[in-house]
Figure 1 (cartoon, rainbow over the protein chains, first blue to last red):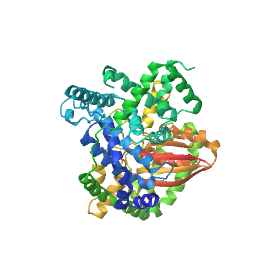
Figure 2: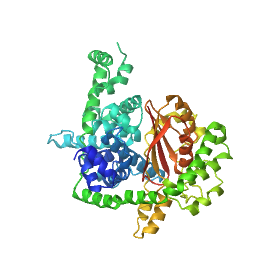
Figure 3: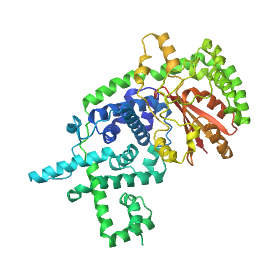
Figure 4: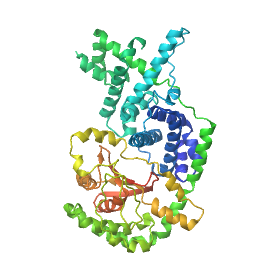
Length: 190
Length: 308
């Protein structure tokens, strides 16, 4: 059964068809949610939330954009809503304090060194990178995540986020420059 | 040759291969002679690589099982929804005709739509008109002329009282702006950010929605009618492009339409949806061809107009 047939069956309430439909996208949705939310549990919860919302809304999917684009749009919005509510509750957990310390993503920066000092530096850098990503504006983070994780081109990102191509260019560029600026003191490690 | 500032502005798109040939060549030329900008490009490349190598949470069996269970709960909903729709559709035709007449009147004199006097009539009547879509009872509809509200506008307070078709709804204002705010230059940036959310803004209100899926069929139907049926995604095709501005001006009375070359989209408070739809229906060259129930919380409906 091809994707369009699965979409049609899903729109008729066939959850098994939907589960087959989303199989190739599930990990990507979780990844995207994780970059957006920076917390494993939240990422899993919101990824599921996004997939459920996609299921109950799929009858309205008209194929104007690709299913992937549509799905990531929903995921992005679920995450943005979650973040907004979290901020509203003034309950944002710092990326670098408390329990989240242990949940910070471990970046594989291709460091095969066994030198303890080098390893410590790389760990510091990894934490700095994920902290810097967490400090980006939500919209910037969404754009950079779609680019870096999903490999979407700018047009796909524009469709996903429903913004102009120029806005996508601007957000990604600013996100990168902000990341670079935030990590300037680690430049020698870059 | 590009200055450093110009080159840096283009560097990210250059790295992603999103520049045209001419611009790309210009950046390349600059990089050949500028060590500083070349270093920035290296940093961009490294950061790009680092972001893509984050150790992500894995989709495991527990994830799949949990998702499967949740999806199964949702799976029955469309059938139930359409069953209710079919049941009450016969009562809607007369009311719909009446609503269209009022809608036409509203379009002819646009200023009246924004006044305190006309909209209550439009909304209350249109609630009846859309009873085939809203699955409201006839008893409820008889009372709708008592509604004394205008177009529902967001309030600062976080108030969420879902309408039962007798009372209008008061909503949280976090997702919409008032018309007065639209003209503020500062809001242009905010508007851009908001547009990310403008069409498919989802609340975490499913606990409420799921509560309506009781074993008791009658109670369930009532719950659905009260809590879910108002939320729809309507699609139109605009065959007459000359009507575009008119449509935008109509939509602006209900929210902040997002306009592109191919579409006009509007996120609209559910309480205003029926009124807006009926006004749109009266526009020549605008065909409504699809209306789909959505389950995105309890606040917003969505209107999507394709420009042909």
